[in-house]
Image (cartoon, rainbow, N blue to C red; front, side):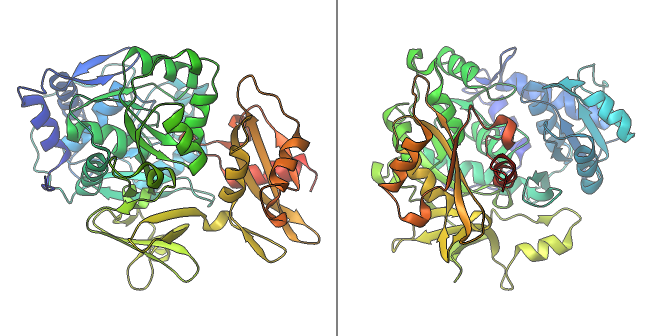
Length: 495
């Protein structure tokens, strides 16, 4: 099957009007069950409400709310009228929300009053945003007027949480995201009868492209929670007999490390993971996901760049060796940076020509800021973040190398490594680990474990066992922010 140029609305109406899929479940949340026909009706109703508010094609519409039927209806509704969705991170505070609204030029904001101890109503009042609609109440009524939307029209502005003070708005088209969902889902072997459990927030491309849109393109059922929490996730995975799942290493480690994990009966067969070999091996052996695929990507690429084929040899998938999608080119710069070009690459950063210019090489390749290696048969191995790399007495150390050694210890659930200042060597490794449920180990034992298994300069000089990474600096998509971890380490060890 080859890719056909389509808009989000084309896919939505195709699924709703198809005899086989119209009555099939499209979305399951803790409070809602919707078929494709019902979800489409909700999207048209949201589109009509937007039109009643004066929102037209090309207008930017912000959404500040947790995963659920409302988020998806508004996103799909905006797409039907050619409006551009601006997802707002539910962990953002007043200044960050205001920045996203101003930087994106949002005309309207749909929000819920409260979520995760955040009082959004007060924050929005403080900002003084003109067209802010409380989606907890009834949206305006109207009749949906069809609009001509094209595949190369903008669909979404994704704010990325990078190392800069404020995030940058990545501009992605219908074709960028839908084709990416289709290409990645084809590699994963997604079927219409699959039930796909989503661990990612919809305000992240892992949630929008690689969960919501992937389910839409293949007509399978999307199962989601308002936010990821391991206990609730395990219960829902079992109850809904989910067959697919996706996430990064931290998410899978949290699932497998939870006390309910051993009691849960799972039906998982496939999905994708952005994780190192130790975690990939555990996903196959402990979670029983035999067809799990290795994935690598970034928001600026819609996001998926490489994905294993579910039929690839198990060892290739465990080692994270995956090929780019057809029409996506990869190269490694002399510094070891992964650079990408092709159909999934962003239009640029919203209202930021300087940052856009900086993101590309002179000959038009996207700089990813990630380190990687290419095999002779064109498979990519992601080594780590260029900015996370640190030098110990002249030797380069990628945090992932040390994290893999720690994760091989039977007691370790998660491991995070950063470089911290040292008078003699410039920088030295500092590690934070959390333990699996029921395991106990001393910090000195973990240091001895590392000493026996890696070069001296890679052995952590500092190591601390922590409960979790929530308080230290985890993003809502389950990634640990290294710059926050480094600041915490310097405070903790008085450096």
